[in-house]
Image 1 (cartoon, helix red, strand yellow):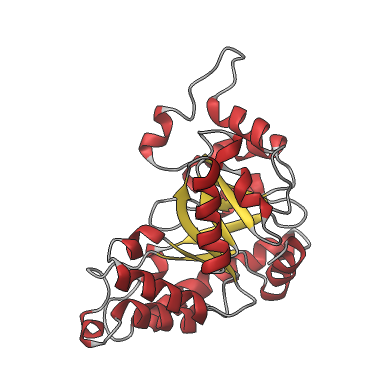
Image 2: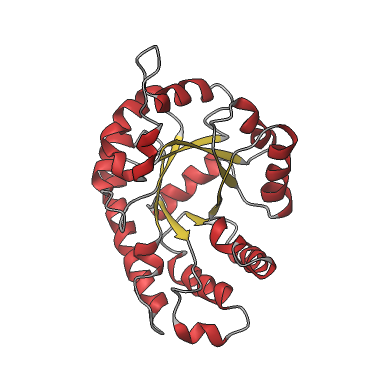
Length: 272
């Protein structure tokens, strides 16, 4: 999916919601465990109940690869089930160099046909540029994450007085364009979003941490929205685990709709 198509979906659905499919076999409703592929059945029902309200799905790859071959099969079935007009993100956080990065890119773009993959940039340009060689595909580069340990390195100041995450942004933005690169910025780092927008005003930001992690949607929009919206705000646990019984999909729908309605108001106020 290219940039124009993504923006068109945001405007059409009046939503910039990304639903994270962090599907844990130990957390899904017990009645699904009797089925042949409980992971896919859970995802299928979540997709059916939320696809009207979101513009992206983000499977966290670790939850699938932890289950071996069956997990990868569940992931592929999930990916195939997602409607074509919805953006797909392989949340894989790959970060290697040379031929290894090229192979990761082929795995997610050619073999599985994801629209994008999250990438760690800390080994430099040759850990990211192989992902930029594919038409209408995106590298989503980790910039400023919301986890507590993210502060261990990301805000260390170099000799120029700039924190490392800003240096990463300033350097990496020249590796690609705003049509094939996005950046991950945690919602709980909302106070930094204005600074980030000064460096990358036009790029899309993937913002996790809204909902269960405590991020505030209004703050994210206030400091990070641009004229094209420029945001994909992710909610995982707050949607997919809103219920844990036979009505789990209906409860997921309610939570997704709540976020979409809040987003619609924000977009209307911004004239998008």
